[in-house]
Length: 215
Image (cartoon, rainbow, N blue to C red; front, side, top):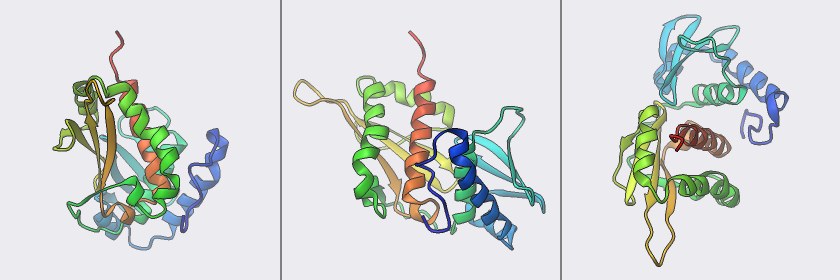
């Protein structure tokens, strides 16, 4: 990753300290915060504060000390989420949505990591929601999800203002098992690296599965 340290190879809190440090340093070098807010969709509050939306929640980024706090909450933001937020804000190019959807395989270098991505992201979606796609719609609503028009059932969730994620499911039948896929706007690489996309999707899937009602 250009100007970044790998997120996927972190292990626990200490494994993420270096990439978080580097992301904070990168933010401190941005000379025009207002312009970066425009590119990322973040809200410029004052010279030392920015608000940014991430998975349907608002986070405060304070500058120049670079701290990230969840709006109206005393809950500590996980380091992995802090890094994703900073990587998105730092890298956002402000590129308009293309309306063209691509798969992870089509992202730069994505084909090399697709096997792992499929097992850690697509397989859990199919496992937990493949036989009950309507349940995906229900839990995705908590993250601001909206119905999309792909597969038999699909939902689009704005992970960040300029990063829509579409989860699509096919029900299957007596001949075929349920299947699924995850789709991105073709401009996603102007906001996140391919590696960051994988980490983002794992976070998203974890949040969705966590919200499945217990029976």
